[in-house]
Length: 321
Image (cartoon, rainbow, N blue to C red; front, side, top):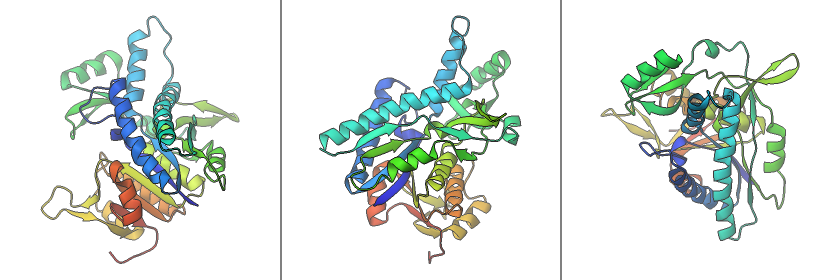
């Protein structure tokens, strides 16, 4: 049985510069569902994870705008709401693909909790951007009026609110995810889990308690893959390859590379925190945690990467570049 965890990027739901309308999101999700269905039709069973930055940001903004009339929900509840929202869109798009292809698969989405530490230093240093982009003037106004910490996204030329992003420790629902994906012969479930990095919770007095944070989706996906003892981790993004010396005259695609080699590039500062850095860190953690292969490529290129070696392939064991 061929299985993988697939982490899809934000562009699979909402592309840069697009208005966050339902129509735009449904169109993008339908395109992504076709690419995933192509992989499944070739005999793969998959667990899908996804981001939620714009969506959870909009939910939080609605809270702020209506708080005089409706009690606002906490951050963990907002993350859960975004899991349900995106999970529904992906589930509907995938199930539509399965019906049209006469495939006996069915997509199921799980509200997934991710355990973090109450003492994680990230709670004292918010860094994770969420929500819409603002001008410098709007950002200053929001900082003054609402106390929101804001950061400039140089790549897209706008300011966004930042929240705490603690390190994920454990996936609370990893056992049911594993049971669904490794269900054996005639297994039919395509699992959508850990949406938006999962709902962040801590253990307090023997009980789970939600916290005000957003967990990095790629790190959560890598931990989920390790937790269910998956060997293949696919990170679908908006570029076909990971590049060394990106945007320099010496830029070159990394096609086949080992964990030790990619670690060297990472330690040399080749992958900035605001772009490829979190994906490479997630890949390294997955391979160090027992995984065997990470593939990083564009969403539309997944099948070509799996079957014909396109994209960047990172192996746990040393290989010749």
